[in-house]
Length: 262
Image: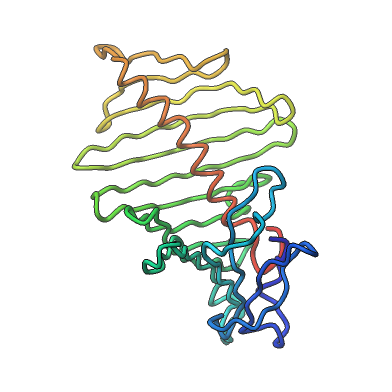
């Protein structure tokens, strides 16, 4: 979807629905109703693996509503809204898979608040991104909760550098009274995609293991008195990957704010 101007959409486009026209190919305004009055609705389709475009014949599988901030005394007091809805082919009720708002605040800060779900497990999100905490770097602080599983995740990531990017991470995961914390400093060559660094893992403030990146695979070193099982190493590998994937996903959600790249 090429349209990124939804937050500044002319009044004539508000309340409109757009569907895919394979002949163009591209989105065109349709006569369908249901779009939000202060935004636009884009129908979503299954994607062809061959072309990367909606499969033909097109069949909607859902839609995304993009809404502009409501008028307010402070222009940034309400955020641009994104709502992603899936529409089952069997006529079952629609499912809202994501609903969040992205708002620009003072001092180059951007916030995201809302939720995402796979239809079963719901993640509550609160993310703040700014470039003022550390000069020459971008800091993203996030809090995630899974209420049905009594799980809380928090992460603070600071990324700096150009061709060689440095990522400093502090990730905490709390569940059933146990807190796992992973702190690390990893440097990545953005050209070769090769990285090096370490991440230290503790459980309830007790040292557990060190994860080292710098060879063909991750290396896991247990803390004194700790014996790592195969399952432990699998968990540590997942924890290491999660710290990067979480940051990447949040940056993707924050990437467009009001139609401009942040």
